[in-house]
Length: 180
Image 1 (tube, rainbow, N blue to C red):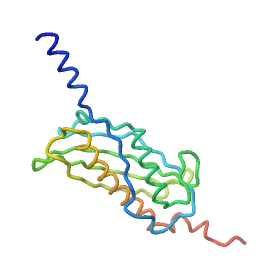
Image 2 (image 1 turned 90 degrees about the horizontal axis):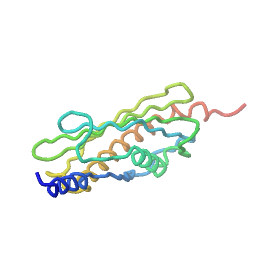
Image 3 (image 1 turned 180 degrees about the horizontal axis):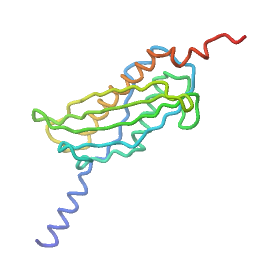
Image 4 (image 1 turned 45 degrees about the vertical axis):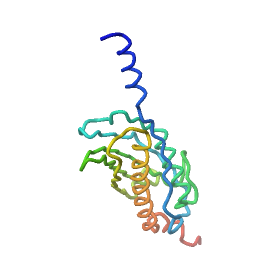
């Protein structure tokens, strides 16, 4: 194979990677506010391709982008009085898995998001949300990956934070008591 063709193939194969940047927005504000500060930590992102193997071909979603997206979401939703990346009253540790499947001629993006809330060393509660968003029939441009990933992530975050809000007494009972 001539060197020119090899160079062209190399350029085309490296230039098609979809570098994802997401900005999931809450569908609404918090149903209630928990008067506690929250530290968010985000574990490594797991990716599974349509072949059920680790990684998704031509997709790059940096851990830092996922972490920042989750923190921005939590701050905008205002479930907690404040959200930090360092020490706080409570810690929410989030693990995320993105799986890509090819069903009925369309790509589907499945987010599995698990959040564990700790108070100090004590696990208070675990929340699990799974949501799927349909994508396009082909993954030609970055938006064909970004939009359904962002949608599935936003639905999963809405689900987890709604459940946390419903469990408000778990996080406020001790601090709502009058001081004597």
